[in-house]
Each structure stands twice: as structure tokens, then as C-alpha cells.
Image (cartoon, rainbow, N blue to C red; front, side, top):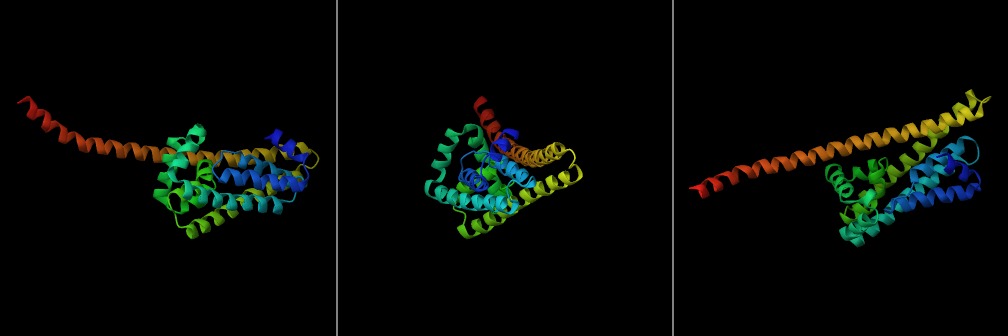
Length: 232
């Protein structure tokens, strides 16, 4: 986090905005990139006055909405074979298990998976391509995509910006402490979102296992009579 922020400080503001939009946009197309880290770091820079928060949030929202739309078009054209190729290329992020959980989220929540997926690392990467591959109507996808992108980008940016400004006001005599507090707030929000996503994934896996167990139990009674008949 500190390395990224130190690097961003050395860039002109316009380059920071373009970088935020670019990284988040490519991530939304289905390529695992640290979009969340770039956004958090840029929002903390805004709290120190290096860049403007409204431009950071706008760049993040633009990258999220456009990137998801491009990912949707790619997924609609490439279908499941494309998702399988992505899984082979990025097995730790987009492997069969991750894809199965993402598909189950779409099956359970429909287009709302696109909206809430913006706040979950796995769905943030897969929402666009997966929605396209599943042929979700584009108008519904775009509405959920735009709403999720705007809430995520502006909410994250201004939350961290406000925390950073408040820390700087109360701790202006110890400026480094304000920066550390802001960074901790950013890490805390990221940890909370990941913990929430992990709970959702665990619940979904448990549901899949219980469903598989139910199917096995249903098959077992049919097997036993056949064995009994063979013994006679």
C-alpha cells in the first residue's frame, strides 16, 4: 500500500486519474489487477491534497462502468470457453471453483449480483464477462453496473477522503499519524468487505455440499434393492 502511494505521489494528477480509470477498467474486463488498491491509495492522496477526490471517484466510476461493459461484450461473444481460458490463465483468481461460486451468485441474485459484485473481489472481476456469457439482458446489466460502479467509486473515495481529512484536522501537528490512520481505515474497510465476501462464499459452498449430499441420499435407496436382488 505504501509503495503504491509513494509511486502515485511522483505522478502528475492527470496521470493518476488515467491510471485509476485504466487499472479498474481492465480489472472489470476480467483481468486480475489491483484496482481496489489503486483506488484506496488515490483516495488517500486526495485527503492530502495531491489530487482531487471528485476526479478520482469519477475516474474510478468511468473505468468500472466502461470496463464491465467491455467485459460483458467479450463474455457474450466468447461464452463459457472464454471463461475456461481465463481460468486456466489465472487459476488462483478465476479457476473452476471461483467461477462456480460466481455463477451461483448470479443464479441466486440475478442482476443484483452485478451491483453487489462491485464490492466483492471475485465478482468485481467476473461480473461483466459472466453476465455476457449468461446472456443477461444488457439494459438490466447496464443499470446494475452503472449503479454499482457509481456507489462503489464515490462511496469508497469520499469515505477515505473524509477519514483522511478528519485525521489531518485533529492530528495536524503529527501529520504522519493522520496518514497512518487513513491507511488503517482503508485497510479496515477492505478487510471487512473481504470477510463479508468470504462468508457469502462459505455459505454458498455449504449449500452446494448439502445439495450434493441430498442427491446422494436420494440415489442410495435405489441402489440397495438391486444389490439385494443380486444376492438372491
